[in-house]
Length: 341
Ligand code: ATP
Ligand code: MG
Ligand code: FE
Image (cartoon, rainbow, N blue to C red):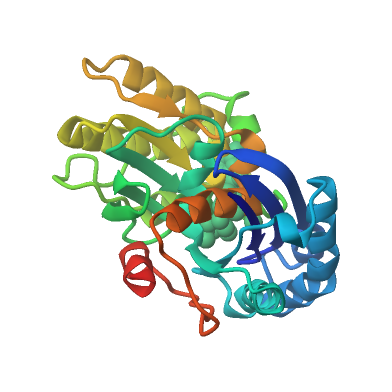
């Protein structure tokens, strides 16, 4: 089964050809980061315009790079939510047009299901599986009964982890998106500030990062007022230690409670070296160790390959969309499945 996949939920326009949900025959990612950086975040109107400019071209490129033609494709997949509505609509419209012109089946894919399925492009997932999904807009612990049934057992009460990285990065004068730079700085500093770790003792799998973000910003502003220079590497290390402590603590609790066969790290923040090392280390200490899949670094951020991987599972389960498929900016995992029946 060969799937042509589209992703345009935020600031990356991407196409890919994926074979049997595991093999990347081609992957094109057109990033718009440079256009948004001067605004310190993603500007929806600008994002939509860039998507529309490149989407036809990168469709041709994905087919060419895979050395295939439309007749070799079995289905067309697209991220239909969550994300920016105008951005999503470009991918959804392109996929629907392609489906109509070729008669190929259409598969709407949840972006978060896609992030998690980046793991499938690296190794075989054994079920039940459990994922820590950490990205710019989401921080969730997801339980997977099989490749298409997902349940969110933990969520953030406020900011997402990636969002917190981007917000504190701004205070340190780091360009959007700040996660990668803060991660690098963290490895050059020490946890000297002892920032708060929220909800560590709570009997649930939820997170909160706004208190940590405020503590960080207050520390910087206070130092500024008294003209004190703080070590940015120590600040980054202290922030990262707090984030990783909470993420690891709650995730390990969930792994102990649910005993999954596979643990997956997903989303843009899954590229974080501190988090990857810590999760591997803590899981290695468990008596009942699940298999750990850390997706390839270049597949942690938004890309169409992960959408093609997730779409293959939906194809196998007979979950197709029709031409009434619409962008759903606030789609949530369980709801996405109902939509697909
Ligand atoms: P979502 O997937 O929740 O809809 P999104 O698509 O905008 O949101 P992603 O593209 O998956 O988010 O991830 C981008 C986020 O990942 C940004 O917030 C970025 O700062 C963060 N990020 C990237 N690399 C790292 C890293 N090494 N450490 C921490 N954060 C990182
Ligand atoms: Mg992005
Ligand atoms: Fe994403």
